Image (cartoon, rainbow, N blue to C red; front, top):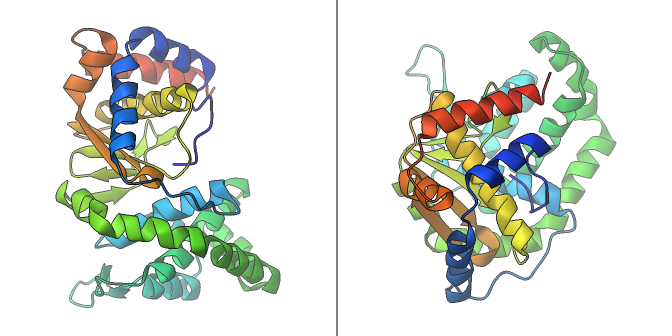
Length: 292
């Protein structure tokens, strides 16, 4: 999940996708048509679009998931900070279960509170990528200082406050029907890891892979990048053990949620029937080769 940017896929896999699925004009035309028919797009822009894109994706997941999403991020936090964030997002320990798992107890948590947690998780995710430590105790020890440091708290608070004017418009659009539509797809998993984590989709709602976009979408290469991304997630899902039957693009800035059955989508893009398992295995081989 991110704002639109070129070259989402490394070169060899991107080239293969373009050769194997070259017939993209009708899909791009359909997306453009949906955008034209939708209400006027959201024009307000956050000061840090990339951070905002990741934070709003996590905000939606926090709103949609009955149990806390992104368990690897929450598990990396020391206990006190973990409990604070979970409580802020509307989760409480379920003491009826022996493991005291956390579950949502408040279905109407204010969006601004969820954005705060989503922003913290986004910053945490970026920090964890830079840590050479892999053991839970080591991660907790490394994070204890920064989490309590005034500068860290100030940076997070400033980023969250600066994003709120833009977030208000996105949140209002999301509540206008897109939340209900996403929930109708089925139980939601946030950030499903594909191909041992070499790719991570935004959301898995029931049997539908969902890609969330908050950026502007005007140029053909941006549509091409979106198609490459959803194709990659679609093809890798089966070889990663997920049962999926559809893919959806939630273009939040444009009030568009476009959902396509996988068989129909791949057939249209390839110009004929596709063995998605074979195609997924081939794409997986290419991507693995790009990460020696």
